[in-house]
Amino acid sequence: MSRRRRIYEGKAKVLFEGPEPGTLIQYFKDDATAFNNQKKGIITGKGVLNNRISEYLMVRLEQIGIPTHFVRRLNMREQLIREVEIIPIEVVVRNVAAGSLCKRFGITEGTALPRSIVEYYLKKDELGDPLVTEEHITAFGWASPQDLDDMFNMALRINDFLVGLFMGVGIRLVDFKVEFGRLYTQDDMRVVLADEISPDSCRLWDVDTNEVMDKDRFRRDMGNVEQAYQEVARRLGVLSESGEQREIKQPKISA
Ligand code: UDP
Image (cartoon, rainbow, N blue to C red; front, side, top):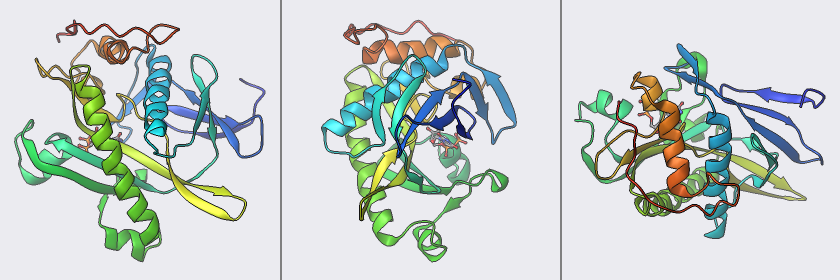
């Protein structure tokens, strides 16, 4: 790992030069941050689990026709991805009120939303990733109207698919964040799903008990963070090497 050229280091991942031009290696760390970097910690084994969970979800999304940057998993903590130009917008899709939506509008956490809501945040740590409108995004050129249209449509398709997938393993997909990138080929460009989808970037609640199974356990010092990530992986059937574990059980992650 150390001899490869490090292209970028983020809060939870490192990007290394890939084996061929146009590829990168995405390394998943155990580091966790919250509240715009003010809270820092380690969730032991998180990188291994998120690598697996994100692989599984990206592969399933590819199967329904969502283009992604994912090529293949290389080992416990690394995956080969296509190099894309990241669009500096975090796309959040919400099904149930939680987090910043509750604070902003005074809505009780857990309220089912009348329909899925798509929001855009500018990726800019110095500004605390502010909420932005489509007008800001196109006026300042962060994404073109076509990019935005693609991102919006893909985000809703991803949501519809993931809501069902998680419901099948007894998990409510409350909300999640995705990032997209521009993939350039010969003389063509298309917007593809990038980054990761994992309990770091989703709110996941047990359908029966409302037990929190995501990074909010770390953000809110709820304890049993590792166990929650493991339980998500186990329910998705990605804990065993063969990836064939599919038994559904109640979680054992009470705070
Ligand atoms: N999210 C994320 N990265 C961010 C901000 C949010 O992955 O920088 C995810 C978060 O985990 C949640 C969803 O996006 O699943 C909506 O987050 P929200 O706007 O409620 O912000 P928060 O309450 O996490 O600050």
